[in-house]
Image (tube, rainbow, N blue to C red; front, side):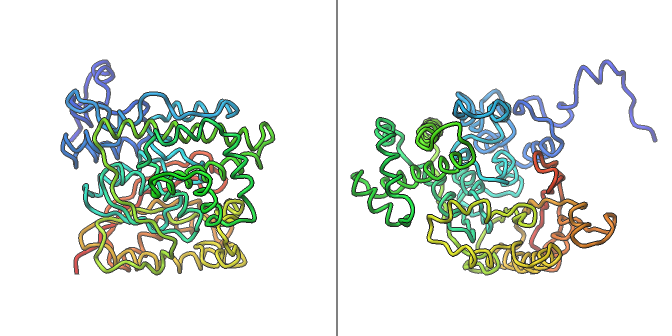
Amino acid sequence: MDHEIQNPIQVLEKGMYHRLFPPELEITPGLSDVYELALAYYESRILTNDELIKNGAYFVKVDGRFTHHYFICTGDPLKIPDYSSSRLKSFFLNNQFRTGYATHGLFPYRGKFHPQMIKAIINIMGIKPGETILDPMMGSGTVSVEAAIMGIKSIGIDASPFCQFMAQTKCDALKINPDSLNAFLTHPEKLFSDFKTLSMPMSVSAQKKQFFDNYPMADPIENERIFNLIFLAFLDSDGYARRSNKKTHADYFKSILERYIASITKIGSAMTQLRISPAEASLYQGDARRLEIEDNRVDGILFSPPYSFAIDYLKNDVTQLQYFETDIHNLSQQMIGLRGKTMKDKYHIYLEDMDRVLSECSRVLKPGRMCAIIVGTNDSQLSKALNIQKDKVSGLNKVMVEIGRSKGFRHVRSLPRQIVGMANTMRQEYIVMLQKQAG
């Protein structure tokens, strides 16, 4: 039987949003990708209106009331240094609700999540404030930062000490009193000079002790948070100075520190007005294949396996890792995706490691709860690596589903998402949703 045919003018005038969302829900501007519309639709069907206001990702108004996401993202966009490219400035301006808000914009870590997407996935997984989410491969800490703002506790684990430091700094920055930072903007040249003097070959612990001596504060916890923030800005500026000679390291440091403090001031003001107290984030350096977490402990798991055979995260972070007394060779033997001589060897070891990771995820997740895996795939790349025809390649998303099934997970749904800016390594990624079955 044919579906109902309507007049073209009437169809075009009404648009399609009224078919997906009730009139009291106003979606965020620029929402156009299919996966975003899907996530917004799921949010609208899973959350109550009050929950959409407090923690919804893809809505700016609900029943005429602005959402918390709107208040957190609006106002001045992320402070971008003058030397940044027009392309970068345009990206953050056009993606005001997607990324760069809160403390997500601290340190431009390669391959990081879109925070707005992460917020929506946490919602559609059914995780509520007070519950606990695990990210066993936390990278720059996007899941933990977003969870903290949503009132959800998190556990984050990463093999890299730099990632642990970066993620902890971003989460702790949500608790910094912006007023205590103003003094550090008064004489950035002296601050840079102090950090430059403290830098290599001193370790982070030694630098921290000297900083506390030079800049004593009444609250030692606040002092540590501020040191970590400034040190992250120093590492960030060091990276810029190595990649570009447009400005000196000192100039980069000054502008990046200003941007960091502006971000913290903005999110701090929003959280105060909205009466948001960041939830606890417990972040560790560790191994996702051997989680030190008790059975049936967490309410949800959300992570992205490292695209190590597409992006060498270790090589990308060598400059920063030097400050953390890290044995680069030993770390490379711990990081998933780096072991093996050929691409084919790396791929097979990668799958063995992911089998162990998903086994651990199944062990620590409560029955009936969900595990979301965001995994990229490139059939052309895998075809060359494995020396098989492209149509015979099983995408990593399908591989994760099969491994998950062997560990007691049920496949719920997979959402495809095009990757922008990594076409030569990863063309598409999938949000794979699994549910741990009871018994």
